[in-house]
Length: 83
Image 1 (spheres, rainbow, N blue to C red):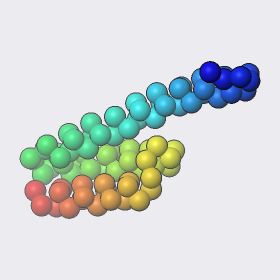
Image 2 (image 1 turned 180 degrees about the horizontal axis):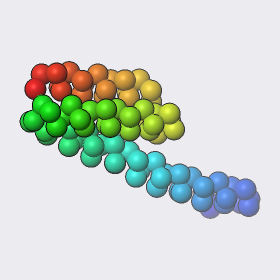
Image 3 (image 1 turned 135 degrees about the horizontal axis):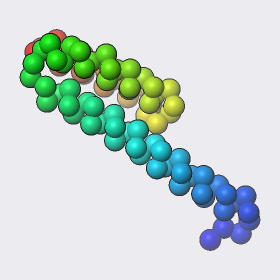
Image 4 (image 1 turned 45 degrees about the horizontal axis):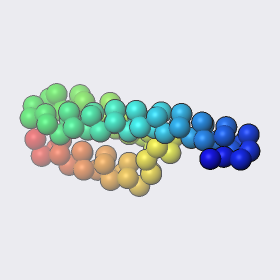
């Protein structure tokens, strides 16, 4: 266990940040899954900008790496174009 007040505070802060990051990462994964499971091209084209915006915001907050965000957006773009 922590020996200092600051270490105890850091543990609490990390727990809160972990929960926050987990929520946004899961939200992103659900949005991506919804887009990938869509078979209608018109619906996919309306969802794509929203999902990419969400991915960019999550990458900006360092929840995921910027290169991972780019890879995800690229794969989603190719998926939408193939529909």
